[in-house]
Image (cartoon, rainbow, N blue to C red; front, side, top):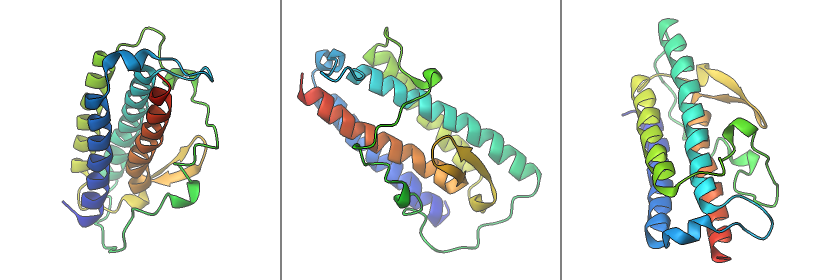
Length: 177
């Protein structure tokens, strides 16, 4: 795997391992706790993560297929892409970001189903990434609904940043339970 994708998928794996450890070490009943501020339950957060990652995976599949058909060039850059989203302060939870209705959790969400779905969409994302290994993902872009245009690397990286942000929220939410 190209070093750019290797470092980004390594980051995704690290964040997912942290999330999995948190889920494994937390009693399942705590995931049904609704925080005082009326936010999502832990189960709702897990379901939301799966919906967002699934949506991004679908977007990338389409972008990558079109770019490959158009002759996406090989990657020639060597600089790291891990800091390419730092200016957006994804992890700053003092700034509330409202999810669109289609990505909000359902009130009937179940932890086991939501967790399984999240695992499945990660495999879908990784298949999409494997399809463009060694290609220059800066040549594809799509608008993020809040932050503006993201290139392919940034979209993949945003999955980990989003998950890390919500892991912070999970820890906050479940500490109240």
